[in-house]
Length: 79
Image (tube, rainbow, N blue to C red):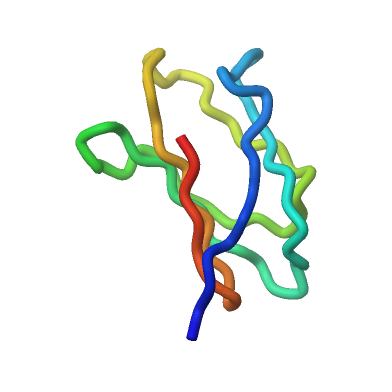
């Protein structure tokens, strides 16, 4: 059974058009990520291979988004 992946998004709110995540999960395999707007629409997605990897939100309107990470261990969501 998959578990909840714990992570923190920083800086929050985002500055300089990008953010990173802080987590204890290991990246022995890439983790899929999805950025959704408040209506649940996917606005960006990609793969993370390291927690320190910056995620760009340049060009997106200011507002609240939900960032979801899914690994083989499970998934987690932060706003």
